[in-house]
Image 1 (cartoon, rainbow, N blue to C red):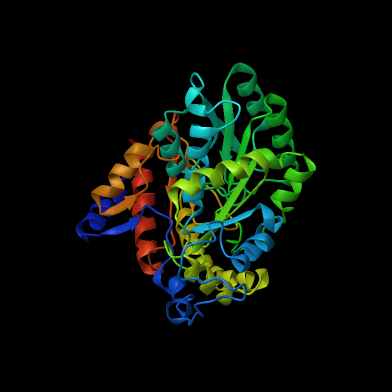
Image 2 (image 1 turned 60 degrees about the vertical axis):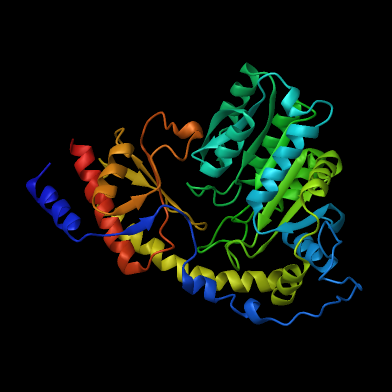
Length: 400
């Protein structure tokens, strides 16, 4: 380690920075794109004669379910329009299977297990910890899930109840699953068990900011594999309109759909139909969503380019980084087990990074070399400063 690097680190530290790039959040300019929703007039009674102010329509108003049908390319009878986030629908799905799955609720299975592709989403892992379900990791590769490793894991383990994955712009490493990978995943899971759950949190379904592989609708692949009764696909407008103020969608069928309806009947008196109506006025069809997301892309893309421009100055000896075509994250992979140390050094100079290990179940990154970077929430000037601090920390930790 050269004295120049240490001197630069101390110069950064002296600035008294306070920059947070831990979570993938839209910045205020992205939120401004949807400000029309804040003052949009809504008629109390919709075209179907439903009073939007009152109870009822537990699975969403018709026009919102129609929008979800077009977005997920699934029949309207298979759509639920829910609240705020895909994460909430994911939790409701897991809870429903934990309590009521047929023929055996997960809570009555001895040591139930689930497949978690890694690196992955810390909030997904927390859900399984809540239920005491053991997580088995399978690596992600360029085309999706490492299917050979998945086969090996399933061969060696009993009572694996399903898999939870992010098939487009995977959080955090950005993989876009190929149609073949998803189709083979269905075949492998169905061969393992007639009750294997395929849960897809498609949170970044429309979040491209560069040309991205075209995927067949996931529902179409599930239907061809005759797997719709074991499939739940969710998405939301959390990073399309407002965080916590959007709407969400689920596509499922048969027993999986009925289980979610059952749990929601206990949990949700009725959805926010006024907000659903606002969103269907704001987005009359899927093309409106695409045009809206193109505006997001114009705001997000420069930030990723700024981060890349700084990361590119690092020697390949220190590590490599992902170049996603959409989503909200960059993944840095160090060549040495230094992720924990890098995060500590960044914190020392006032730059907060997602904790090391967060992208693995139980917070345990076995190689201690994966770090998630979330460049969207801060402005480009702050981001450039934060990334400079980050690469300085990487160089110090690598030398140590």
